[in-house]
Length: 412
Length: 201
Image (cartoon, rainbow over all chains, first blue to last red):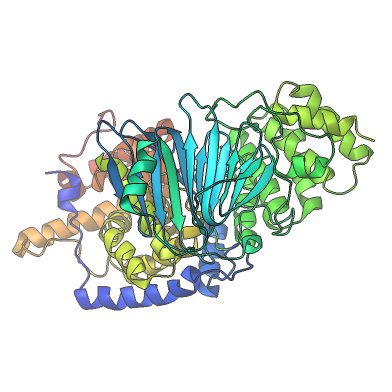
């Protein structure tokens, strides 16, 4: 007989559980309400949950650091596999490999090889669903479209049937409308023939869907057309990033970069390591701010908290209560939260300076130096910005970010 | 594929919750309440304030649901929150007069009756009185591993400690309990089958 057998758990009475469930669901309702259309972060959480989270922050000392676990990876065999994802249906073709992660409340489907077709219900006011194929990311915001990826991480094409999609690649954002096709080969948008753009609500037939799968394409169908400029997570479209959003940056406006391909190298931090085409024209040297902003920030430790203020408080507690690598991780997370979520750039810089003083060889050093560059270069590119860029470029010369830092430090 | 399906179910369930679907929130609560209740009970040794504690856990869960990044399973993520709540509760209970603890005598299975029940109840009371002398970290690690039956690695994950630290905490707790049991026949008998401090599991 184990100790567990000797300490049985007496169940709570059903009526007590029922009352408890009612109370919890009622208390949770504000937190689970859909965010306002223009909100960049779900601020609409209840005061009660915020207070509870704040109390937990104060009361608990070592805050557990969630382990970094690889995202779910699904590999199909010789059969097509269909998975219901609530308001989305995912059909994976035979011999397909993809992974699924949640980012900022949204769903991220990342195709490694093969084909996946997605049918997505409208997601108004909710974090977006992304489909990524190599270094191309497509934001599902209100359209029916097909993405095809050639074997071996080759050319990616995005063909839009109706509505508009955003194709993100290497910092560029290309809106592609119904009846148009985008190709990663040259980054151009061309008109396609035979696409019915007069029936935006029409479902594709099963045969068309099967053909898409059979051709090695993937598709998504979101029968809703919200305002593209109001959705959250506008800067998350860089590959491999777990960044949810960057409200301190563009304030929610899409970087309307003309459709183009900018550089052949995947962004820094892309852990997929997918091959990118190398026959693309070089990016213009201008618009450094856009290139800096669209680089993904390295993910930080996730801590609970109803609001960014709560999370910052919890990270501060963790910094104070821990040592070594744990404190370093928390300090970077604090700086990131202060900059990205709270817009307190001065505080963020102080946190970063504290990091560099305490952990000059910390595991997050690269992320810290990039974040510092990003903050110092968010306005005028002045001497402080160039100095930060110089520091970064010196240490990380052979990276995509290093190239950008090099451009910044040499800019006039 | 079972783990993957469960993982996808978590993702879907959270997505539905974040869509404001009340039925999804109820589903999430019902799926996880028994496990959370069991863990809290095994750590604290009493159903005193249990409804409040469960409410505290799940309000935090729903309040932070948007920050769940699926880096760990939803159950693990919820358990981390439950451990924090248990930790806080231990602090609060330490501030109470001792006689208020274990007042509900509900730690004994209903089918155990008569003098055996009294004896078992007394054993549980002394176990938790002994656990109350430990640090919260040692108490939680011991309770989750030895009483709730979770593997050490899982305990380490939900408490945010390293595996080594978790082993050390459990070992210290065992050592302290066996030291107390040496002078307490009831506790000694209650712990009779529990691993000795040097034992490995």
